[in-house]
Image 1: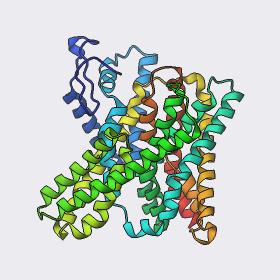
Image 2 (image 1 turned 90 degrees about the horizontal axis):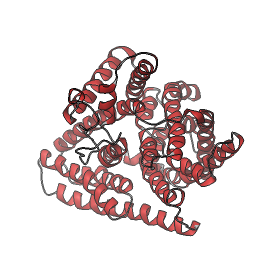
Image 3 (image 1 turned 90 degrees about the vertical axis):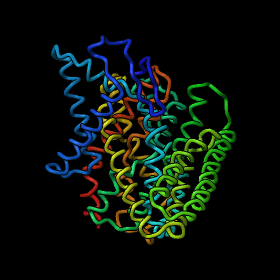
Length: 433
């Protein structure tokens, strides 16, 4: 997966030393293939399948990957070109250093600020305290399962899995909720939580990696302090950058220039915050929310707002199509450990239970059944889909048995949540209306 050759900042790796000249592939080859596959799959889904786009793309890519793996295993089919193409990509770098800031910024721009303010307490608690509770409960359940199955997984390692699997992915869910005509308050809760909990989950994961992988001793107070600095610092930095962006936007009335400024805000706030050892994910969300509220109302004309929305909607759709296509294709090159399939299946249940516990505690603390629509707990629990961020985090771990074990568990949870939970969430929403 990590070939020798040119490496761009987006994570594409081109290698010419491990394959004959006839099998050499280039960055252009890979980009052309990925974009073409994503576009074709999008067309097929729109024309024939009518499934949530991201789920359909991942399912088709996953099915294609399994077919290739089957041909390799049971026939003499030479799949070197296919595997070489997929092996060119460092998935972690593509997502965390390339795609994620733009997806988060696009999501922040399209948030309904009025409804976000109405649900702000629940959203903040779900994305912070809820993530910590979910990570802890999931880690404890997975550790208990590992003991029962004689799997070599320590409690800190199980907590690390809980942290990387805690962030939810709103991309597929929002379209499903709208199609099922879910209450707007429920949609605001889910989209607002998912915007913030990515950054919180990453910060928690990074705090635990030093202990689990690096063996660095740390007290709970030290972990909490580092967590607070990264999280609060990231939000504060993002608000500052967003305000500077607003000052720039109000000085011009030329939508190409203003769109360019927002691109710089997305990339710059993320990279700068990470360089300052703060949460880049939370910084870019905070910057995006400033632009979505103050910037849109006071710094843009009606024409610019329309052009900006169209631009970022296209960016969001394209990057998500490519990303979920890669999630399905990546199974060709990741090292899954099928010895721990039983633990992986147990992890699915642990993730659902931990999500139910964390969401239930937050909803109860912020008003209970008197405040929220019927079925909110069930929908938020079943709709807590996991996606590419969890895969990227586990791939950031050093190679070895721990990564292979956690990767197997993570892929099981992601595939189940997208294909099973995602495809049945609409029915659950309609049943609880």
